[in-house]
Picture 1 (tube, rainbow, N blue to C red):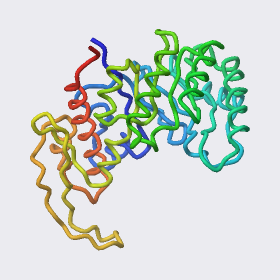
Picture 2 (picture 1 turned 30 degrees about the horizontal axis):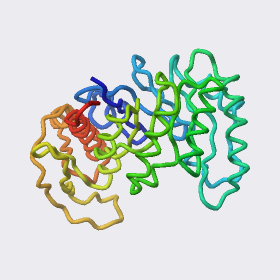
Picture 3 (picture 1 turned 135 degrees about the horizontal axis):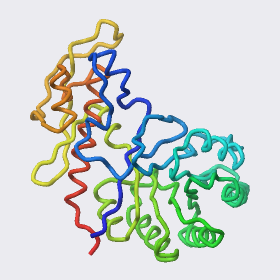
Picture 4 (picture 1 turned 180 degrees about the horizontal axis):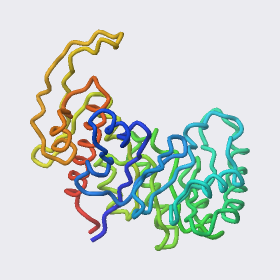
Length: 308
């Protein structure tokens, strides 16, 4: 029974042990607040974490989104391979250097640079890591050809990039990913960067996409949204607002959330320490809310039909 693997994006802003130690007097690792561990985590060099579970095959992203507007990429095959050598645990999937093909840039230069770096990175990547190349292109045809070329030179792990900002182009993106999947060897690991809404994940299950990553669990939390399942549907309540912090220069009106009490690991564990994940206005509440959201989103994902 095939289902696309989910890799939540983990950042510095999501629950560090030293934060819980200082605030609660007890060490709580973020994985202790997750009901069911995901396939792995996506760890970006832009916000790198060194405390991920060692028993998971995690994906390490090169941070291409952060330098997408720079004319010259600050990373290349040489310095990125060395960075991964210093930071990446054995067996990690590591994304090769890439520069996004976006409007307003020298597309021809970036296209050529991406190919050169893909070749060099295969040569330089430590042999205890799994190199993954990003599949870019202005058209579906270009992406298909590029994916085929990447597998031809030796890549066994590919990531479809440059689509997260085009989520509204649902049919076009699904068609493109389907064509890429059909054009590469069946044992190639195919990842899609940044599209993990349930609508997309339902399609990825059927297409046979190996894995995806997502940030919605913490983006919604920090926007004051709490995830819940109701009759099998994922929905969101508004968070309540804690009484104004005297150090906060903004004026907020305290409020109470309509969200019902939850007994997921994040909610139940933090409630024992006086932290209500349905409230926002303080760091630990919002971070606990993020991990609550992750628990609920992963439950919703399991309700989607597997590949037929």
